[in-house]
Image 1 (cartoon, rainbow, N blue to C red):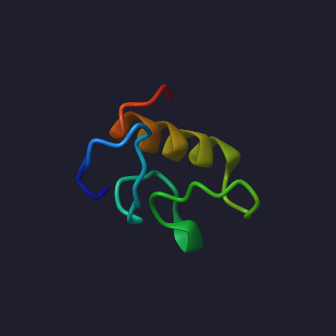
Image 2 (cartoon, rainbow, N blue to C red; image 1 turned 90 degrees about the vertical axis):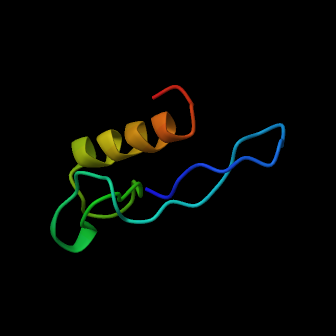
Length: 58
């Protein structure tokens, strides 16, 4: 994941790379999309990791 950088904004936001997740194959690593053919458990874990990275509730 890309390091979190803040600009003092009220709501955290940013971009993630594909690194740091658990998905495999065509969805390799940090796939957070719910409408693909990735395993829903992998997507849930990836979303949890992304939320933790920005200090949100997983």
